[in-house]
Picture: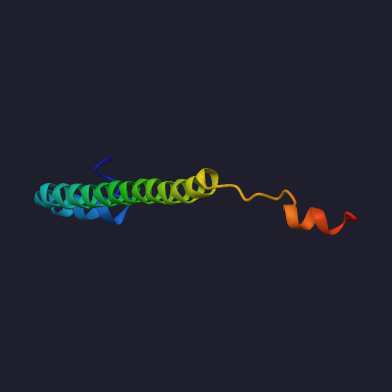
Length: 86
């Protein structure tokens, strides 16, 4: 910034008029960045937890179908004797 031109943004004007506020502003912006970062990490952890839990539930449901006993579809002795003459 040159001394003959006024600061362009509102924040630059405030910092130009009140240079002692720079430290407080840095702490406030830093705190907000930490809150945003913590929120993103929390959402990511919950997303991974949800996907793992859902995968376990799906895997458990599929395991019972694959490991279950198969039904016998061959004709029984009584059904096969009905069609044959004695």
